[in-house]
Image 1 (cartoon, rainbow, N blue to C red):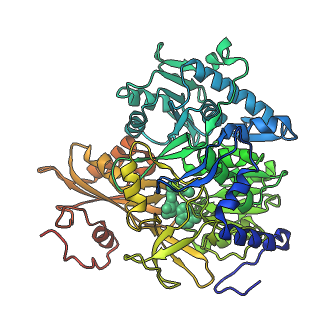
Image 2 (image 1 turned 120 degrees about the horizontal axis):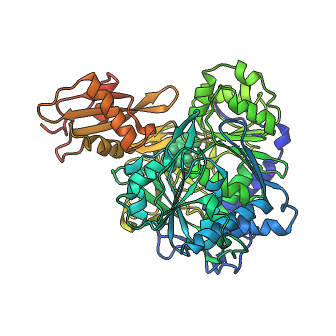
Image 3 (image 1 turned 180 degrees about the vertical axis):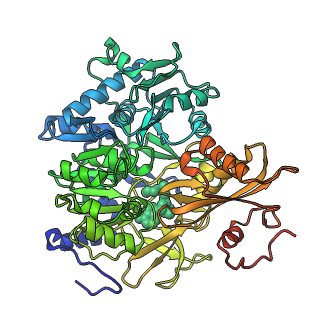
Length: 626
Ligand code: PRX
């Protein structure tokens, strides 16, 4: 193996597949479509595809055109006739640590079929939109798969979003059905989801039915015509019997998932059955060396893309055993995760740097109380991992022997784009190289490739199967956002460097997206929540570096004439954002100001505000409005 520059961790010989991996990398580089076709052929199709990649209407790329499949056929149906039938598909543990459920592929099929029968009886079919607003309980997985089985399009909303945010997303998708729960458990308390849904539905006329899963058991108001307890529905004859999996065109929509961009209106990223299936299956298999005896734990919530791709679909496509925990990492004590790893024999832990930094703060004694020797691989996603957190994760959790797969990707990409393989030498803080079949570049403003080591805009050169197909109902914004700065190349929205060994180092967003504890939020969303408060005339939100959360939200607020800035008002505004957008978006600091720095065309100069908030030089102010 060649000598690499900087700090390098060479792989354990147990992952001695480096030669194979590199041979595959070379073959995929020479013929990406051939590589993807071979992976697609490992999955089941009702009808084979005619063409692997159709570039005729780029950047609206199509994959496996003419092919017919259904992701659920590959996640569940095909496992029912083979040795995986009785294998555990899902192990679930509730926040209290007492509630536990396990599902084999056989029983997962039973649950998904039951839910599919119910929603079909409510008139949901191919192409219909269903909003899922559920906590991390098994029903969230059943609901996603039930939709996919029928060809309906799911739109999962993270159950930490508030009524306004939920309502925007329900209305935009024109969902007919909402699947929710009475509440979710958050650190021993109840987050009242059904109340939030009721509030959101006051302005969502498209919704005909609401299915409510009983989780917390507190009293909720049920609309007799619209709302149905899930446990009542499962007892009805409509829930019984088989429910055929709908054959879908490879390019039919599987789901939409809202994510934040540069404007106040979140964008709905659209993914399809065929390509997304092939992409998530392949990336999980090669990056995490999925084996039959593995117990795979992705700590993400199904409300985000990581949960979609690597908690739900990727593991099931691989016939793996996926572990899901309802709670967070520190409740009731900061050994919760370590306890679960020991008890359930977790082999792979895939999590976010923010969680690692949080747990690291509590010291080594908590993990050291537990036998973590079942772990063989670790993973990181969502933001750059700082070397300190990387070393702690590697040494204390991975006992120096588990490679860390730092995977860079996005809601838009659907699957890993830059990531190592377990057999590859690792550099802390770098995601390694583009995945098989992918090529990435770092460009300057004019589109020239920058020299190794220099920072620039990260672009992806090759289409990939799990790529977003468009923004739901907004083709123009799709082209404009991702394909217009450098025609023919996908603009990721991140700045990055490439080193002389070909390893990529992602630095952070170049747009107004703020990553708070790995959650993706937009400056404009926070700002529009703030200006909905009667005291606020104008607001600007920025992300500032934060030791644990990665970024914290700092806002500048201009008050309406005659309103006095007070600490009480600042607190009220913080709460206002929490209630109207999400508790995760609650600003850490509010600065009242007379005026916001703007360009002559009226654009807020967040760069200037960032410098001001950090006490740094405010830089070139020549374009500032006078
Ligand atoms: O800035 C990058 C960061 O997260 C952004 C995508 O956010 P989201 O769509 O929410 O998806 C997160 C999970 C896939 C990226 O543009 N990001 C994601 N993974 C990494 C990362 N930054 C550095 N290193 C990573 N491994």
